[in-house]
Length: 242
Image (cartoon, rainbow, N blue to C red; front, side, top):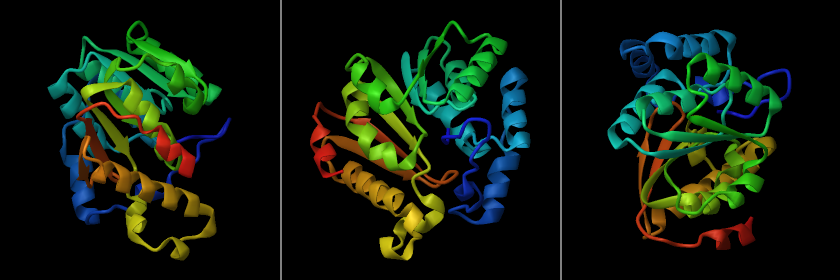
């Protein structure tokens, strides 16, 4: 989920700038099945309070794809209140989920939600910066990754994601279109978002052109890219250009 400051949530303005027709977004968010029980309650509560979780159409897709793949070891970067981690753990009942977030407030709220949903024994929380934690994780351990964190950090985290992802595994990355502004010239973007703009474009260019990866783009929420690791490759060289 999107990063937040202690004591308050930073709302993602791009969530309200759909990349497809607004009426289709509304249809996808309202017509698709709701999640039952505690998971549905968590989604509803987060939406009512304005807590930045993945929108419903993205959640339905994530539930579908995780349910189809049935991964055994899932890694998430960006826990927030634990909705997407809980969703993935529910969709793949045999999976162990590890989730990373740097904010203590997120950690404690997610912990309470995992306990409430009966998932605490299957979800491991790691508190800290993903840039510090990812290099310490076992290489090739995870078969499914979900990244929804600081957008400017995606390209920085990517080499380490590829290290811990097994060959054939899938990385799903959320919020990559920036409300459609990703296609604009960087100098036409406000100065405060130019770093995000540059790094997201670098990230997209890299993963879509590298022959060791397969990828596909989906206009759900603020955009998703799915990346499959086809063979081993060390991507840390890209860090030299950041």
